[in-house]
Amino acid sequence: MWLKDGDLNTKYFHASTKQRRAVNRIVGLHNEGNVWVAGEKEVQKVGVDYFQKLFTSTLPVDFTRVLENVSGCITPTENEILTRGATEMEVREALFMMHPEKAPGPDGMTALFFQRSWHIVKEDILAMVNNFLSTGVLDDRLNMTNICLIPKTD
Image (tube, rainbow, N blue to C red):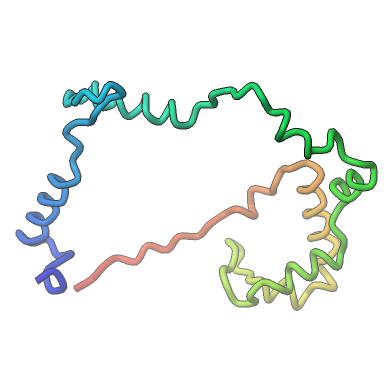
């Protein structure tokens, strides 16, 4: 039955949705004292309190055993490695590891365009990557997404 009428606007669809909603509905919770609370505000409070307690630090006082194995600071060599820019070869390798025909950007260009025209665009791409590594700010245009909504039809 579900395969035939599952997503259609039918009595069966509405009945199954209503049933699922009833089964998934939270009508009450046990609080920290193991007392059942059923009021909407009380249930919300129990939920909020639970997750606040779960994700709040208890501020343990004895870190000495953990910190014994952590060096206090990085060496000048490590600092140089961590703060240096990307090389042309590193950026090129990353670009050429990308599938050439997947996920075009808003401009319609896939990785294939940049791979084939690497000799022309390499300096601009390298400058953009190194700007990101030094400032931590990514050009907004690089994170744009195209969404194509396709309506369902019978």
